[in-house]
Length: 103
Image (cartoon, rainbow, N blue to C red; front, side):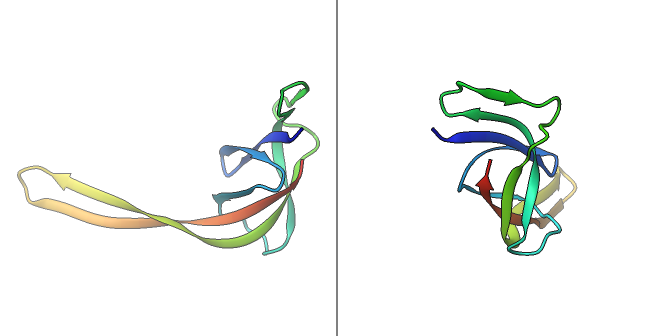
């Protein structure tokens, strides 16, 4: 049975399992460094055993920083009717790719 966990990083929550690669908001860590992520919940695939934190568990999920990069471009458009006002700008968020090592 595979273990799943709900982690929190960057103000967002992610559902992860071991050996999964996820993309999160940029973390100030070096590449190939190991980090421990805040764990909110751990459960089995069949949900036989569930560990809930209030709000977080003492044990954390171990992850490794694989790479840093930039996400996809988001187009930001502004428009006002009848006054010929149009603006196009873009935004690319800085992201970090993590590999989940153990739960």
